[in-house]
Length: 120
Image 1 (cartoon, one colour):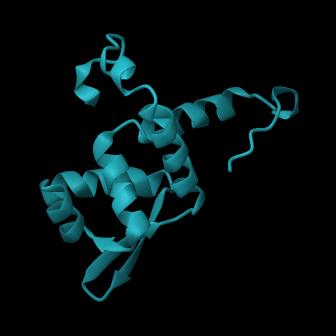
Image 2: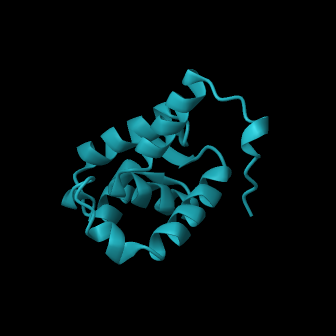
Image 3: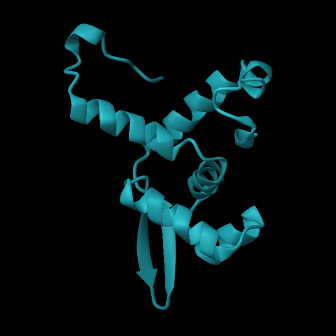
């Protein structure tokens, strides 16, 4: 269970607000969400992820670069291969909570004209 601190105890600064918005923006791409879900199952290479997603390895690499920069994932060189894994176990909790919240609002979210139809 995720515990949310009361608003009075949270120090809201412009930096924290910006970081939080960017955190959610990283999660705002369906391909990155799927990559994270696959990595929650265990470590994977770019080619394994590309096969699972049926996506070009270059696109998967770009998503992984974003996820690595934002510290969602970490990489480890094993010889000539780079293996990616989840960097923070709290990522799993964030994904579970996000899915639970979205599941109850799928139809409504699908009709939202403010975020566009491309999220589907």
